[in-house]
Length: 59
Image (cartoon, rainbow, N blue to C red; front, side, top):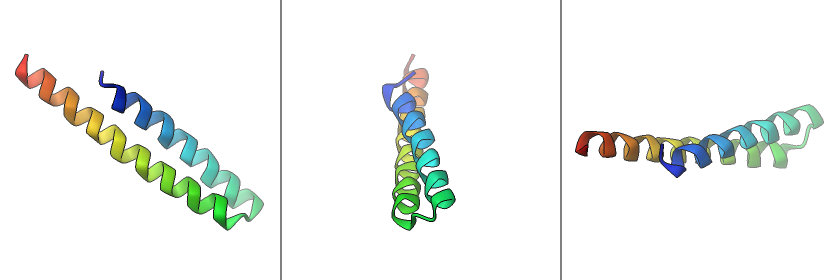
């Protein structure tokens, strides 16, 4: 499993927590930061999945 896959999943989860905390507290800045971090994590996860698929294909 590619390291981007794992790091992306962690970042995605962290972003989800920040976003939820922002919603609960009414902190729009935290909510937006969380949403951005979650999106960044999703992208990083997809990059990791793509690298895994390439490695599998080449094996």
